[in-house]
Amino acid sequence: MLALFDFDGTLTTRETLPDFLRFATPPRRLHLGTLLFVLPVLAYRLKLLPVSVLRALLVRYAFGGLPRTAVEEAGRRFAATVLPSLVRPEMQARLDAHRARGDTVVVVSGGFDVYLAPWCASQGVELLCSSLEHAGDRMTGRYAGPQCVAAEKVRRVRQRYDVARYREIHAHGDTHEDLALLALADQAIYRGAPWPAGADRRSQ
Image (cartoon, rainbow, N blue to C red; front, side, top):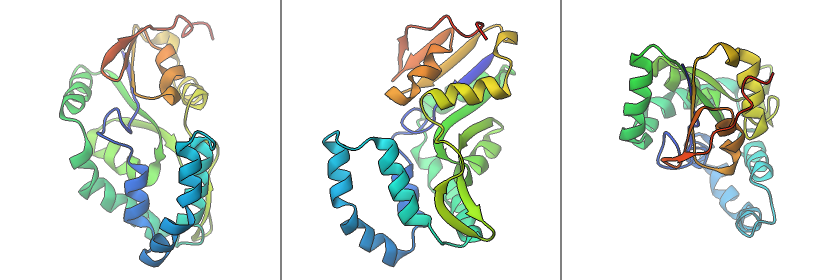
């Protein structure tokens, strides 16, 4: 069986990117950013700015030019000290049950590998997610490739796994950015409730 879990809001009680931005952004840059991003955040809340664009703007401001080692170390500390308190106990139990059965368990997330990779390693599960770009020893402030959301989640799953060889696929999500992933599954759970599963997983 293949078990696919979105991370933010599904395995956790809330989005973790804002937490990581506050955790990893230098204090002076963080304080100035609270003023600079008032209008972009308002535009997002008014549905005038797509969330993917807001994320890209925030990441560019927060991490552009920072030492790569500092961001990676912040990710490891964030995974060890912050993420455990944000994971839903009932979802941890579900993830553990899949792993105990020997299922292939994969976190498929728009979050970043700098903190998701150490967390997933501690859980013994696999990971598909977004990454931060770097040039040498400095962060560029850009995503390395597409954000791992919406259809990109399905593309990455199909790229790594032969979905046709799995007897059954389970998927868990909580936003519109997870719907394509849920459509890949035989049993899909959206915000804790069954969601109509798609029939396309063996079509490619």
